[in-house]
Length: 170
Image (cartoon, rainbow, N blue to C red; front, side, top):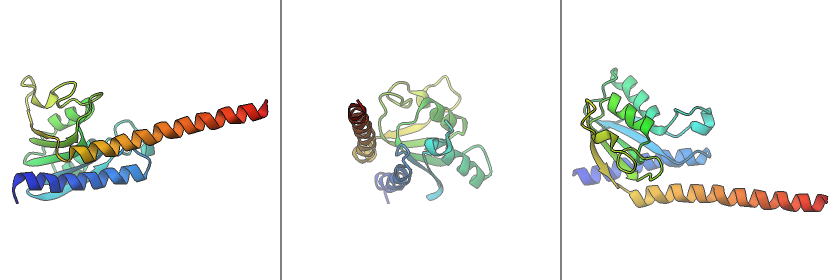
């Protein structure tokens, strides 16, 4: 199988992880790590569930991959993630020496691979990554857009209900 089709296949697995996050009411972001054509880690966002700011999909996948390999160096791996990594996750990617990152949708408000900064390709660091962006970007982006749209609609509905309740009390 060629690299393009492998990337799409593995990104679909990351999307499946994102759907697990969404089912929990989490921001739908999923990640997997592949080593020698084998998935060694799968994770999805759990920040709301754990009430822990560092339980991003990428960080959880990195922790699991380190345990699987038995090393903090994740050389010869590829990280697939549905959304462009944030600064915290980009730092963990660099620190764990992941050589290749494939992501779906850009994050114009927090992405630190291409959007706001280019942390994974900054020669001032002692490690740089090959980056492939935009794999299944439409599907990844639409999942996030729909999730946040539903939150906004729910907030509007709650506000409207609250106003109606206040009017009835008056």
